[in-house]
Length: 553
Image (cartoon, rainbow, N blue to C red; front, side, top):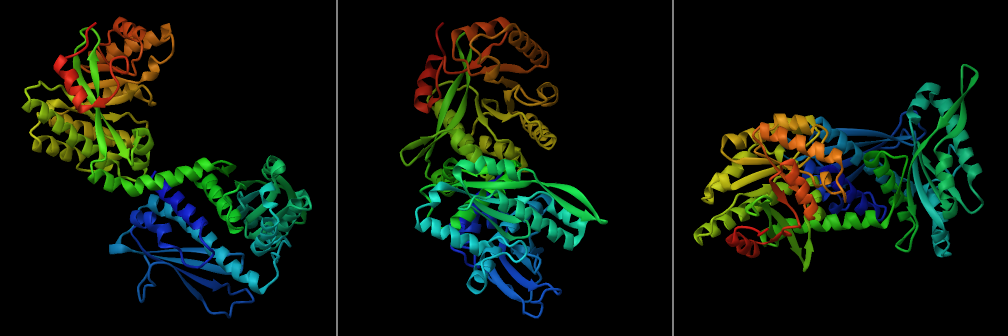
């Protein structure tokens, strides 16, 4: 997802920063592009009922310039520790507005900005006040950092894991019991946390329902189990009621990469945000794989456009074969990225490009190169075969995609029946509608289409009926077992017969063994693609194979 990737990059960069009010531009670069951000300004105000209500508002420019005499496009308001409000003023380029999905997604970004702002404000408080949270008596962020600094200096921090956690549905508890009793419940909850800790461990309260902890590694799972359901009580109408409070948690297993104590909070907070907003799990651990993945994805995003312009992507061709005659009846174009001497396969970069909304340019690039191949064969007197090109489901959001495909084919002077467009089936109703329209547009223009990985979706048979395609490619999972059973054979035979009755050709992917060929012959499948015949190969090697027309029995 574009948002998920941009969000993780944002949190990763932010977590490495010093605690200052401004956000480094690099942290919000990706998100700014997606959401047309011009600037973000935080205005910090004291609540009227607080003892600081006479203090003037504080204006903090977080990103971009401070707009003057201009109404913001959006406002997000948060309460900070029951004493202050932080209002984020969002300004966009060119009078841009968001849809509801974009608004909800950006609200998650604001949550992280709120945590950043809170860290900054609390870091100031540390210099001027005690290191204890006023309500619960637990250490506040300053107390947490002070204690963590000592552990770092003593080389003891490696023995601990760092936690950031929020309480599930605490707002509902507070509304049910009122502010006063809600505070008492928070005190009781905090006392339970305190009781769990051993003398060298700590739990900190940053205000609201935001907590952090440093727990010895051997007790990490015990702590996660403990905070999954802590029993306290609330008083309503002079009666005690049992309450079970659960937490959502991010865990950073402290390692040698720790540079400064603030990362104990920021890295665990990154995992907390992922647990809440992406994974939807009660807890998530930060791990090297997550960090490496974020870094790797960032590299791919940054290098992609330049690499595409420099022709670092090479197109390989994998033959499609008629197993009854050995004849090559077509091929599939597949991209390989030669990046700094390393070959990257589609599984490494396509999902990232899909998430960033960048994959359409690659798919169109592959189409252009494929048309160049066909044109070159024709000029050499080599009879071409139809070549298929994959287009991502994410491309379907481009309104004029079918028109762009036809234009490229026609401009290259390639016959339309020599190009086949492949898409992967989907279970999403919205995507089904877009896909049906896309496939119909191509069919009307005389371009063949195929459904890739057929049989992996939730509604394959209805797709067979509804999608106007000329071919389905049966997923390799149908024949991948060492010995296909009777049920596999029955399913395959019926899919093939239904497709043929509908005038749709059938090709099976992933053929690697001769016994798979025999199975497919027995059920009436004529066309296959797989390593048994050839791996994907450079164009000059495929050309040699094309001249021979196929494979001998």
